[in-house]
Image 1 (tube, rainbow, N blue to C red):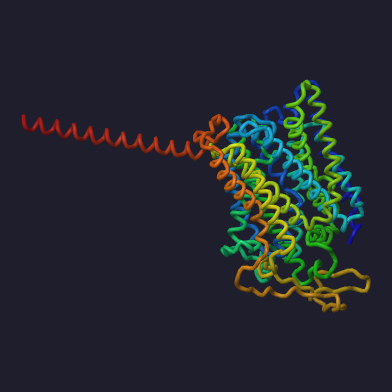
Image 2: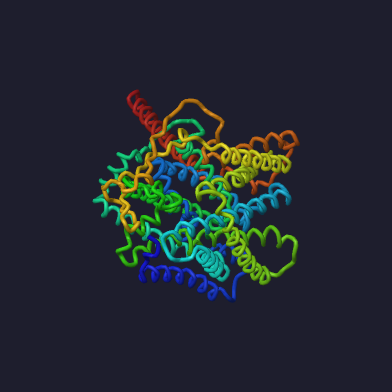
Length: 600
């Protein structure tokens, strides 16, 4: 099915590519005589809530969202949609705990906080962990979509990787954070349009929403509620809510890319509004992912292309569906591919890549160069651009290693679990625990790393068995291999080559817990909890109770919406109580006056 794109499809891709690049060029021209390195990296703290919220949403709509998430639903069911509860808790926690501190300090790099709260060694450790995580993750983001889409187009895999990096480096280097934010706004519209194009086409192909829901119900894909507390289960209410919350707080709470965005807002009210508007965007894309997975199953319920060997991984299901259903509609295939590229996939994966590169440049300038040099602002601005180019090239090079790291979802969560979890524990200790000291922080983050690495190694050596992951049945009974070697996906004819057809048998559920890895969604939680527990114990044993911390570095009750809500309600109750007392007093006075009059 490769090479079915028409001229109109490539025109759509080219237009999105050029449009993204022109935004960077425009902002470079508009700011050529003004601004400094901090303005370049934070947008001059002049951004409003709406564009920043759209940029936050777009920045994390990566290959997981557009390729891996629908494949998860196709394979394991719509229970994946319960991640919505994790999103809600993530935004509330970020808005109440992390945002007030980072915004008050006006930090360009989140790792500046670690030096202010602990010491320079802690800052450098956090910076190095962030840089390793970002470079590895960005390599996955570039390589994964290019691998999947290379199966259905004539574009060379490595040509796509280099094109992605080149476009990203161009607009991010020229325009700084404003270019990234406004390109994200442009691309999120492309992403939504592309997603809608394929889902609407599937609805028409399958005869309506009701048929897709019915097919998913019959195939066991609508398995929304599962409250099993076994930590080895892949997807349950608890793994998706608790584990998902921890993983996403590590993204929105302390990761340089989103923090750099909401700190760029003109006020903390705009920053908070950006986070909550972003929640709407995240939820929309999650629903689209779940429904796309149900569309996948409805179309291929009788002939699974993965089991039949037509694709090498389930991450390629969405591109196959696009080519299979949109080939006869000029431009629509290109629109979806543009959405995939704009969503951190393949040629235009510069939403995620640019966010990462820009963030890496910010961290390098603020943490590793500025403290040790006396460079002027103009020199720092040019150095920021040089760093952006250098990291772009390095991230492209890292894409070559991603082929040995497993599937997109597995590789992403593995990296996050190892590195983001302990860092989240370190920041949490610093912000909410006044007795956490430097020794405790370092001990905690190192302990969290050791435990996280151990858990990930166990997951590779002894992954959870099928009775824990519970993949849903797939079949190829409806496949029809024609004489030309193509596959008719929807034909009810019996397969002509039964030796190549296999069917996934239902999983046999067994009782008991065996020595296998826990759910991948708990990796980050384990690292976070370990870092906090060990760090606090170490702090108490090394004189942490004597710590005197600047109040600006800690979360204060006045920072939270919860406190102001409580105060407002308390004041209203007090006012009402006073009014009632006055009313009672007036009534008593009137009664006394009447009694006096009667007696007289």
